[in-house]
Image (cartoon, rainbow, N blue to C red; front, side, top):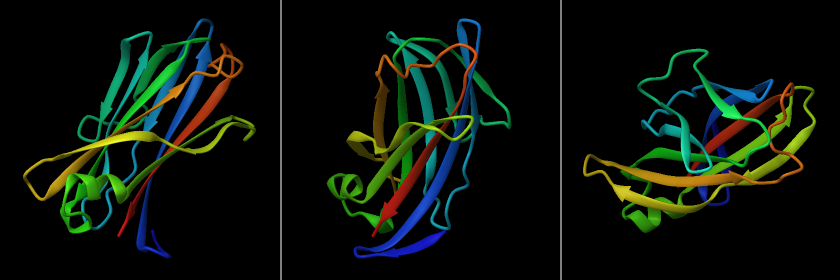
Length: 163
């Protein structure tokens, strides 16, 4: 989808997760978005709890319905990497400036747990192949809203490219 904004073109690449809590575990279901016409895409999402990677889903190993088990009532970190075509940036600094990743978490009944929040702490790497990889993370560390057993959550990640 292309949208105009005051800085030029904006491309949205959505990614949707479902967090489904069972007993003391939470299931994380991954659904991939498609790359845009320039090859910009969400490259990888890894999920961490207590310094332990609970799962890693890449664009190339994604299959419909893949699940990641995470523990209930535990802080959860989402590490996200995205590919950015170098037509949208001429340096790693510009790649960071022109990239945004947003996270939104809701209950299955659409009640918002975490409102759309920009993921920060970006850094970028020039891949040397006409793309940059831009990295970011979000730490879900609100004890009142950690994944709870028996509750289903949906996690949306939206990648936006500015030009």
